[in-house]
Structure formats: C-alpha cells, structure tokens
View 1 (cartoon, rainbow, N blue to C red):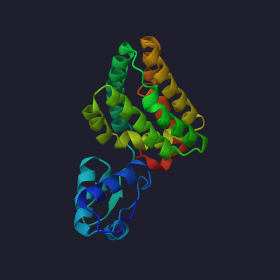
View 2: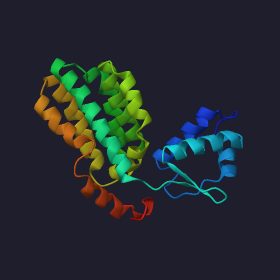
View 3: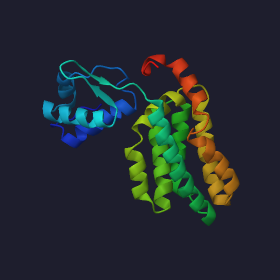
Length: 225
C-alpha cells in the first residue's frame, strides 16, 4: 500500500486495500486494524470501514463484529470461476483477431519486453501487472475495452492464486512463452495452435492438481477443509 501525501479519498482507499489483498501484500489470515490502516493510508476511519464492508461483499475480507477483521483465506472455487470466465472471453477475443490475422506485435512489443525483464528478475507482481497490460491491449485492439474492464474488476480472487502459482519454479517462463505463442498464432491466423495455447493459458483445466501443488507449498493461506 502506498501512503498519500494528502488525505486519501474513498475510492483510493478501496483500491489500495484491494490491491494489497489481491497481490498478497496483505496475506490471507492477516488481522486488519483500522487504526493502523488509517495511519498508513492517511485517511479517517470512515473510508476504511466503507472499503472493508465493500471488500467483505467481494469475499476478500471477513468481518466479525466486536472481534476482528481478517483478510479472507484464498478460495480456489471463486478463483477457478473467474479463471474460466476469463478463458471464455479472452479466447473469443483472440480468435476474432486470429480470423483477421491482426498485426498486434507492435501494440504489445514494449509490454513483452518488460515482461521478459520481470521474468528475468523473478518479479512476480510486476509480471502480473504487465500480463494484465498485455491482455488489456489485446482487448483494446479488438475494440472490447469495456469487456476487459469487467474482467479486470473481478480478477482479485484469481490474482491471489496467480501470485502463488507464478512463484513456483518454471511458471513465469511457461507463461511468457504462452504470450509469445498467442501473438504468433494470431498473426499467422493459426486458430488450432491459438486454441491449444488458450486452453492451458488460464489454468482453468486440471485445477485439482494445481490446487494440490499450491496448497502443498503455501498451506497457511487457505481455509481448512
């Protein structure tokens, strides 16, 4: 979370807290103290309370009146639902561009360059932000900015799993190669290869195996079954 030099507005407080949760700056199970948050975000308690209630409605925060407020454990079911929705929309937009053999290299060239640098530094958070920028550009080229905005607003549960997933050995490299394949397949009009890449890119398949692997490495971040 970034502290503002002037009093932080309600929307900024909500976004700062949501980003801190979805990118695991605030870890699952962490106690959220209003006094500490008001000091860190340089705001009054009212926007903090409003943000926490809003985040509770998104299942990212658990509020226990007269007790404590916690960052919610990661819910794989919610994350997988978002991943599947993203897969359906992303695949259709990419296939639309593929049928047109759209030239997208120039639009994503800079983002891919910085993704490669983030990969080289094992900077997972920066890589995810650039990943979002890459796909936002794809949607923009296809003329579907509004659809991307809807996806972006619902990604928090998926992002929490993605952060952990990309910390596993070799996953950043795998993801980066998939992005290169997406670009080359679209420009070549190769729908078969594009479909095959998209089927694994969002990890909406074999979710049980992925969940087991992530839980084994990061057991403290999930609710007990």
